[in-house]
Length: 116
Image (cartoon, rainbow, N blue to C red):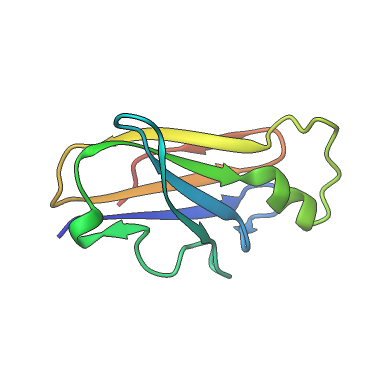
């Protein structure tokens, strides 16, 4: 059974990004909000973001609320912040696969990849 997961690491502190809000949107047709989750103490989401009957092929976007997270940790950001909302668009082609979309983030950079 396929599933979608994520993990966020704060590269400036070398720690998991606890408390970051993450939204999942489906982009096939008009954008539709699917779910909002928050990362735990390990920088992960408790359970899969998407799985079972709701996990199906298509185009999606994870929206990471990095600016809110950074401000909550005491990072002083310029106004406007260089990075605030980080959208990661990706496709799910195989409904039986595990799609893991990690985010490495700091106030001025981010990277992602398809994890395992």
